[in-house]
Image (cartoon, rainbow, N blue to C red):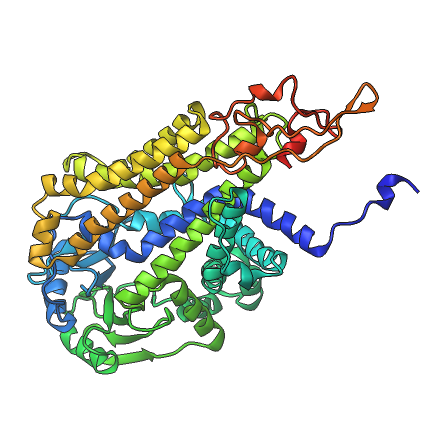
Length: 578
């Protein structure tokens, strides 16, 4: 029997470890961006407020029943021929009313003052919605393509989580174990602790993320069960609050008082339980008014609404519940979004999700740290290793710089610039691309340090820029009790401190030199005395093990001539690195 056939097959843990490593690496860069942008999306409404500084802070949430008649009157002037209006009311996280409507082949939208219900001019920006949409459909590509890529990465994440749990036989012990300053061991401990700490959340958020796109990922069940148009419409009614406008009669009729309709809904859901009204064929005798329940007060996004005759005000239909399968999907969707949570719960979502981001990032870094120890010459790694190392720098440190640049674009771009909201996004990607180019040309360790310091400096200066360009600087916000603006600026300062700490830790890090094992080098057919010289005294393989980007800072000159020679590989220093 050949030697190859006698080789022992890898066990289940080793197989799962390999699966965990490669699924994590192949999707890691996109997953890191998805996690981080999804994390900040838990405060997307607050980010949107900060990016529209002309909108004053909200003193009191308007009553939808009082505001709706004024909004309907305004919409009658703005879009009198539109077949459908959808009007959203202010809530405690969004101080303005909004509406979108069909205007020919396109949708149009407007923002309204919460008191006068008149359109207001706000800064042209996507606000926090950019991060929210990017985290599941990316950008610069058809929406469907982006969602497929995000879904495939989420599936890789699910595989990585399950295989990671199987790999770690002491997973709970690992949670309480952290060995500081131990190079690769420290990175592994940090990765384990971050993974175990948020394991239920990471599993939930990944699985429910796939559930949100389940009709795209697995359409065959629906195709088989709902074959005709009527059945498909019934399915749609179970998933969303949408009633087609239908054809107008052509006979004009005034809209019945919507305030009475909303009050009926408030009796069921509370004063601020109404999130939106949709008016089909406004001003026509076949008009319908749908009053939709808000999602922010319940752990489900399943549709609940009241449907009224738009001219008589008669209640036609009540949607209080959906089937079991649809409700399960609605609950999972709500768990993923976290909109039902109050401020402390949203912060908990944010922090655990941030730990998930760090888990992905530490896994990416650990891949290079672990393999650097096995490089024949750490100063001249092969192309694939260099590519992974530079992509790690741009994906982790570079993304921080790009996200801050997005906020700078909001404050510095002219408000009269055409397609201004698109240019804010262009700034984000241009800066992100520039960080990748920078990482490619700089020594790896210097690339980490310099980009982390750049992110820290930009984060720290952002509140200053806000104070210079608006009248809602940090001190004014604190004095006025404007906690959205004050909280945003304070968060930027806190993240600046975090990035500065990471930069300092990376700068100060000096990997410990691991002595070479006693190795009987064979010279001229006789055993030579064991060598005790450290492997790569001036930064060889062992010295580079613990640094996430210490390739170029280390010198491999000592690896030539006179150092230990591995009897296995014939390459100097390799045995010492092990």
